[in-house]
Image (cartoon, rainbow, N blue to C red):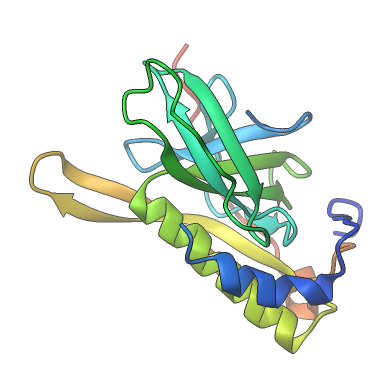
Length: 210
């Protein structure tokens, strides 16, 4: 697993816990990353072709990658985005760009890397403006902060990507993302013994129709 995960940062891991807890309630990917999201049918998908994530695959959360900020959407197009690390205050914004249907929307995000299955080693960025999505990222950030306070040597959360849902009076069933915690590993990929021995037996994902 150490050949797959190797997160680096100039920020000492000891400063993450307090900063994440302090700022977490304030509620285009970097080069080499794909965009991952949950679609309206409750499936995790990534990339321009909306390829579905393999069920049951495990993902490593980069503890230095939690972001918060604002995004302005036009008609299906990002007009502007201002994000900063969650350990820093929210970025300042002025008037939203012309054509922004909802003005500035609060957004949070995090980066993760696939550990096993067909996409092992792939890096992805997840951002969201939905209430359920923001809650999932914020809860994950708090778990990371609590883990750092207990064991600074293993701050990387190992998760599987799940879903929950609720019933909306107007829009029907609404799916929300879930990060199910499976264990912890070091920044260089050293995992807990039970995690090293575990094998993912995930079925093949559904691929989008041609």
